[in-house]
Image 1 (tube, rainbow, N blue to C red):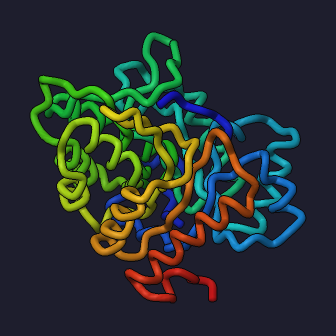
Image 2: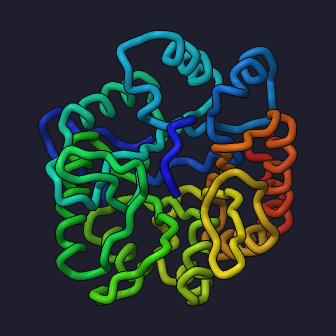
Length: 304
């Protein structure tokens, strides 16, 4: 899908490489939402039952102004994680070091529980295509991405968290499955994994494989976050649009993911047709109820 910018790890000593594989696993946060401008007033003026927020990093990588002032207020009340959409970790283009500087500066300001981005590329030759684009799952690509993850982790002083993307094409040159690629990447870099439940469903549907093979194929001890979102059913294929409520088949896969991975911080993404906050909270409540049924009430209400 096209990118819409709508919205405690151990740090390394400055100049020294991070040691991500030895870092403590980030804490279980419970149930959160993506921070969206439409909900600022409800959040700041009330006390909604939301355990944490995910913020789009690029929206707040600015020198100052109202967005940062609001983020400061929210970060003072809720745990926050940073989620990027344009790191382009798998690109062959050199990293934008100014971008990484901005990411580090924002992390120092808000002290996120972790920093995530997508296992994909988003641009090349100085052009950002604003799409999360797939990669071939080859040994050559794996070596390339491993080196780039190490570079980012040294720059940010912590283990990066990487998300599986939804895909609509596959490469004939791929030498392994997506889950085998991700597993080896995590083993070689110590990165954490953001398991996007909807993306797994979308890719499995589009490419004709069993989503459970993906779920069972990645290391359970590296998964620290779930994404839930809605998609558009185009009959012969499905598109990760983030503009619908979570569908029943994705809720079923979420329950299976809970059984495999245990308590994992869960959030709902909505980037278009964004409903009022109470409506989204009702959907988040459904996620709580599923987690409670699978893993017990302490998981559903971790702060209780």
